[in-house]
Image 1 (tube, rainbow, N blue to C red):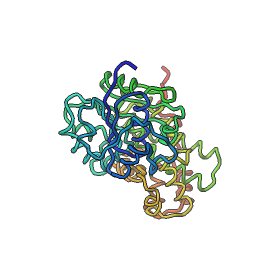
Image 2: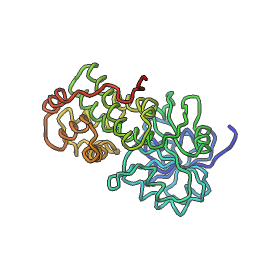
Image 3: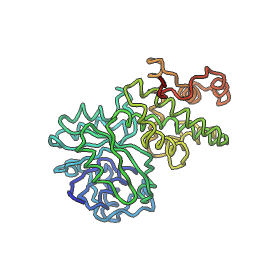
Image 4: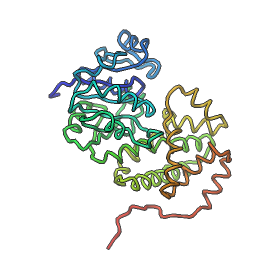
Amino acid sequence: MTDKHKVAIVGGGSFGTAIANIVADNGHDVCLWMRNAERVAEVNEQHSNSAYLPDISLNPALRASTDLAETVTGCDVVFVAVPSKSCRDVARQLAPLLVDGTMVVSTTKGIEVDSNELMSEVLREELGNVSIGVMSGPNLAKELAAREITGTVIASADEQLTQCIQDLLQCSYFRVYAGSDIYGVELAGALKNVYAIVAGLAAALGVGHNTISMLVTRSLAEMSRYAVQKGADPLTFLGLAGVGDLFVTCTSPLSRNYRVGYALGQGRDLNEVVAELGQVAEGVNTLKLLKQQSQQLDIYMPLVNGLYAIIYEGKTVQEVIGDMMWAEQNRDVEFAVQKS
């Protein structure tokens, strides 16, 4: 390690805690901001966060605080790991506390409901003259905290930021790749949550592997189709932030959105499932936004439309599947290189 950094992690949920633990393992000065004083005490005294990462021992050097100013003052790197609905409010609290040039990295995989903005856009609006990056990939927090091998993507227009985050987080079990397509990386992380719900629902119905494979592949097609309309690079979706994250969240019970879909497939009520989960399942909010946007922009998104019809319009799964199987058959790969 060359430079020692002072780092703040804003948001003490499962992923924020896992990232903070990596930073501590790598020997940097790190503080985790959490709202709950009891959880702060648990991190500081017992070196655990049992509410979000049970059975995981945290590095004793990791500190936690309920004081946002104390957490971020003097930091050169700040990770924002709060739910999308809280991002703007937290950013406004952060704004007077950060100096120009602070590197701010969003790890939130969601879209703001009222504005339809991604987290990097919210942070850019609220924080002023800071350097913005986004991080996304197949990063289930419990596996990351258990030090299982995985990779992620850090994307920013600032190459100094991407290099810094790579140096900060790279370790024997976590590989950090760089990218410049902020919008694509961030959209991939937000959109895949919807399709994880679809995959969970399908799994609960006991479908075969062929069906799951088709769902994941067509989900990738819908995601990239939407993202390209929004200005993203379709090739981003072939990497860790795209197909990598989509695959893991569509096949793992550790994924919150997958668990929501699985419960819906068992016939349970959405509100009951979300309340029982105790953590944010971003895909529920993102589904409404995607449905609205796909209609406004005339983007063909049959899986989004089908899931929306099941959850909000009272259609049965059988009805939706029937409609989809007889719908217009589009091209398999839409962004293939055309031979001259």
